[in-house]
Image 1: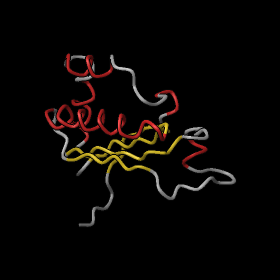
Image 2: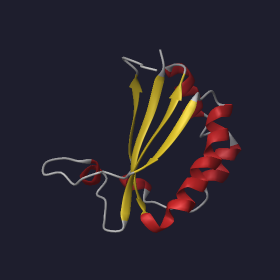
Image 3: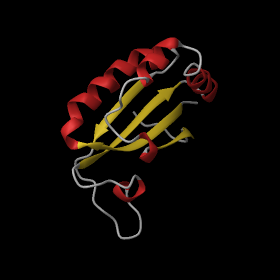
Image 4: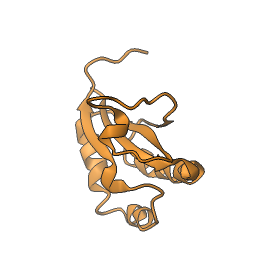
Length: 119
């Protein structure tokens, strides 16, 4: 069953192009290590909540947009193997040596078993 790595992060709105460029350059690495697809979704209708919300979860600040991303894998084993390559594939080291256009400390992420897939 498909396995998904999901991410939510606040990105300075003025750095949208820079963020999307880095995201697009990361796709070949994910693909080389078994990913099926990847989505980077720029927030459009992401309201503040009273108790909880995407902006609250990542402590979004004025001038930031919430980005919702995911990478799909054929299974958890492929996901885990891909994530392990972040320690061994030098292309990841070069990638993460760059200045990221967002505060990675406020990114939330997790791995999810897919319970239903509609196409």
